[in-house]
Image 1: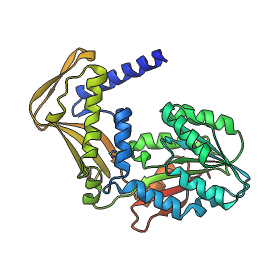
Image 2 (image 1 turned 90 degrees about the vertical axis):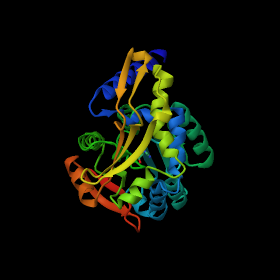
Image 3 (image 1 turned 45 degrees about the horizontal axis):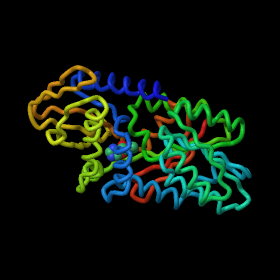
Length: 324
Ligand code: AVI
């Protein structure tokens, strides 16, 4: 375990050095999620401006029969969730699955990198749903998927990837990721992916720059993490959070903008990094989709869209896919 922690820390150090040494500077969004970052992200999900979570939950609640319909009438159903976190939205699906046919058994394989969150969630779910069997899998998406599919064998399954997490992947990475999933899907299986749709720049930008400043703290937390884990000397008050919708690239970008000329030392790297006043560090891209671009992404990944489940405003698509 100690060796694993050290390996992760070394990788963090290499990624920070590479990102801050690049032009333009960047940091990888995966590093938002330490304990504090994960807590802040949970808060973001219930902010009035961050419509994504409640819109997706609304689709799950209102269209659950169509989602369940993709699974046929098996007595036992396998659900694999990538990046399950606290499984809050997935509960909506369980309620529908287990209420519709009380004799049914659902086997749930939540995959997440946080072992503690997984265990707490698994215990709570097992207490709340009698016919739910939870086999939690700690790990990254790839190894987790491999494990879950090994346990499920040839039985029918649905793989779910909610929350518009696909939007944090660049196009080629999204194709590669979906191709990996495609390789695990049999004919009767289904894939459910949450895509955030393109909309007014104002709506998008306030979703990533809320009035209470929670997203700003979430963004700045990456510098706090460098301070805590890599002996960084970032003064958080001399960087500003910025969110903008890059229309031609179809993505919301988050940046940290230096408020002054400054040099910041990172002890673990034995180096200082220079920032010009107004210079920005790109910390996250959140891609927004259209129905056409979802279909083209599916096609490039060897998948086919079975159904687009959109809310009334067409702000979010919970897309059902399968392997043709
Ligand atoms: C996790 N991911 C889908 C979120 C998003 O909307 O891109 C992360 C996030 N960043 C700022 N707010 C939320």
